Amino acid sequence: MKKYRHVLFDLDRTLWDFEINNKATLNEVFDRFHLKKKCNCSFETFFEIYNIVNNSLWENYRCGKLTKEILLTKRFVVVLEHFNVVDASDAISISDYYLAESPRKKQLLPYAKELLEYLVAQNYSMHIVTNGFKDIQHTKLNISEIRQYFENVFTSEVIGFPKPDKRFFEFVLRSLMCSHEDCIMIGDDFKNDILGACSMHIDAIFVNFESHKVESTNHCLKEVFSLKEIEKIL
Image (tube, rainbow, N blue to C red; front, side, top):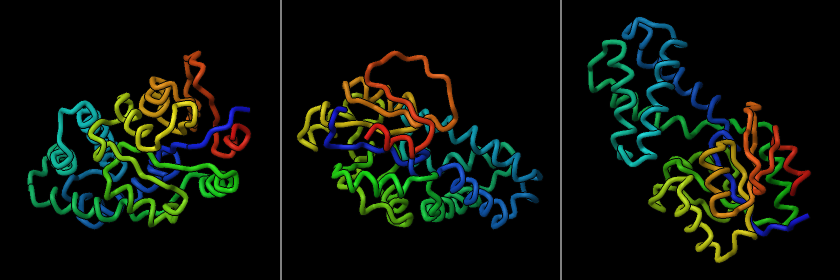
């Protein structure tokens, strides 16, 4: 079996359970800011609209159409406007609370810490490669107590290019002073993590938690449906 030196991990939805942590924080927001009354809706409706707005704005951010600052404040402005709440101070307060509390949630995906312990024992050098914002991602890693497993945290905010841009992965390879053959990428996002890595001929493991259909014969690609299965590859 091919021996790698470096393991590149995505963070959100690969190790850190974004879905559970995000929903828990938004539930707190909904109660704390009395949005059931202000928005005249259920939490599930609020949550659905938030996800639609947030996903759209993140896509615009990755395409360079939005700045970080606009993304982080505008999403709650747009959500509240959907429910005819136009108090800008509400959106700012909600954004501040969400940004402070969301990364402090600790829930990891099943077998995340066990996998990291296993890879440490195998003497791999491990690194986070993420499109998330620097301060937020560091907080997540520290609070969930997995920062110690990683030698580097590479963020698109610092590098200047987001995954799947080849320049993101070129920066990582230069920083590690290694060849693409020395690395393997592990992530849940087929476009950003897997195709991005494969564009630089970096082998990749697609953690297909949702059992999405994958139409690819790319030789770089390996597919698993749980984190534990990665032990069979590494």
